[in-house]
Amino acid sequence: MPLHGQISGYFLTKISTGAWPPGMRLAPQRELSRQLGVNRSTVVTALGQLTAMGLIEGRRGGGTIVTGTRLPIGHTDTSAAAAPAGPERSGNWNDYVEEGIHYPNLPTIQEINRLEYEPGLIRLGTGEPAPELLPGAAMNQVLAGLAQRVLPPLSYEEPLGSPALRAAVSRLLARSGITAGPDSILITSGALQGLQLIALGLLPRGSSILLEKPSYLYSIHAFQSAGVKFSGLPMDGRGLIPEYLTAEAIRTKAAMLYSIPSFHNPTGILMDKGRRQELMEVTGRLGLPILEDGAYQELWLDTPPPPPLKALDQEGRVLHLGTLSKAASPGLRIGWIAGPEPVVRRLADIKMQSDYGASSLSQLAAASWLTGGYHEEHLYVLRGRLRTRRDYMLELLQLHCTGLATWNVPAGGFYIWLSLHQAVPPRKLFSAALSAGLLLNTGDLYDRSDVRHLRLSYAYASAAELERSIPLLAELIRRGL
Image 1 (tube, one colour):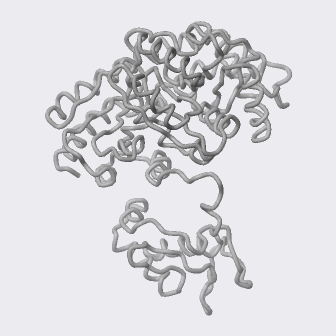
Image 2 (image 1 turned 60 degrees about the vertical axis):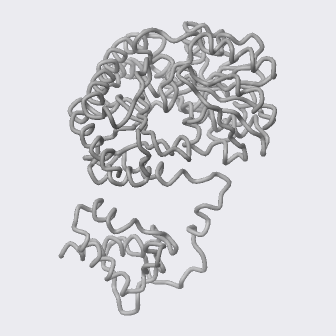
Image 3 (image 1 turned 90 degrees about the horizontal axis):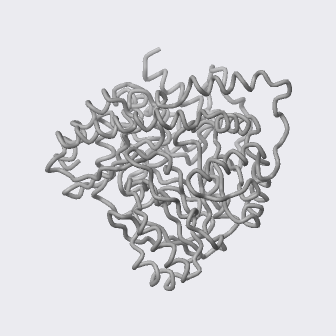
C-alpha cells in the first residue's frame, strides 16, 4: 500500500474508533510530516482522502478538524480496530476536554511534554538528569535488597507516608539545618503534587500569592486552576528583592510567598545568606507564610548554599518542599512537605482523598536509598558530573554566543539563563529550533511577556549533543528566528 494510503488508513482507524472524536484539531501538516517522517505532499494526499470521505475538514485560520466518526455509505473499513456500524452518537467526550476546573497546560508545554520522548531531538531545556547521570547500579542494589524481604509492602501506608521514610527524610533535612520530626513531614508523589495539595487545601479561591518573576510556577497551572492569582516580584543577582515585597503584599492582600532560593528555576540564581535573612525579617513583620521550594538545594556545584529558609524559621511560617526527582530518580515519584503538624495533616487528608498515598514500594525503596548511605555517595558523583557539563556548556556559549547574548554562571542546579541582546518571537524560535532538531524552553513559559530569554539545561544533553546544538542555536538567534 502506498504511504499516503497507509497514513489515511491509520487516521481512519483513529477517527472510526472515537480515539479522535469530532471537533478534535489535527496537528499542522508540517508537524504531521515531521512526526511521520514523510514528505508534506504525502500528508496532503492522505488528508485529502479523508476530506473526500467527509471525516475531516480544513477551516480558514482554524486548522484541520475532525468532523465525524461514521464511515461514509459504501465504505468498508477492514482494519481490526474499526468500530462496528451503529447509530450516530449524540455526544462525545471531546465536548468536555477543556471544561474541567483544572486548566490545560500551555500549548508549548504540552508540545514539549510530548516531544521529549521523540527520538532524535536534542533536549536543551529539560529539567531532569540524563539517564546516564541517574544511579542505575546503586538503585539496582537497593531493589535487590528489597527483593530479599519476606513480605514486600503491598498494603497502603499511613496518611503521612511510610514512618521509615519520614524518619529518613527528617535526618536528611537536619543535615541542611532544618528541624522537622517525622510527624511534621508528608510524603508526596513528587514535589509537584505538594504544590497541588497546597493550592487545593490551604488557599481560598481568589487569593493571591507572591513569587519571583520569572518563575517555574508560571509554567504549570496548579494554583491558577484553584482560583489563585500570581503577583510577580523582580529579582537581581542575589535573588528576590525584598524592598518590593511589603507594598505588593499589602496591595494584593497576599496569602503567601513562593520562592526557590537555591538555584532558582529558571534563572539558576542563588539567594545569598543576607538576602535570606532579610526576606525572613520582612515576611515576619507582615505575618506572611512562605512556601520554599528546595528541589535543587542539594545540587550545589561549587560550595554548599546558605541554610534554607526553613532552617531560619522559628515561627512555623515556612513550608518546605523537597524531592528525590532531581538527583536520584524522577521515576520513583517521591517528594515531601515539611511544616507545622496541623498543616501537614490537612494536606495528608487531601492526599488520601486523591490517591490514598504514594506507592508503598517506592517509599520502601526511597527509605532504603536514604538510610543505606547511597544518597550522599551519589550526590558526590553527580555534582562532579554536573560541574563538568556546566563548564562545557559555558565554554560553548563563550565560543558561539558572545555578542548575541549574556548568561549567568550558576553555582548549582541545572540551568543557565540565556539573555538575548535582541528580542526574538519565542514561538518562531521554538519552531525553527524544532525543525533543526533542538527542543527549547523559551522564556515566555516562565514570564508570559518575556521575548529575550532561554532556559538552557546542562543536565540532559550529552557533550556531543551540546557541541552540535549550541552553534545551531547561535545561528538561529543570529537570524532572529
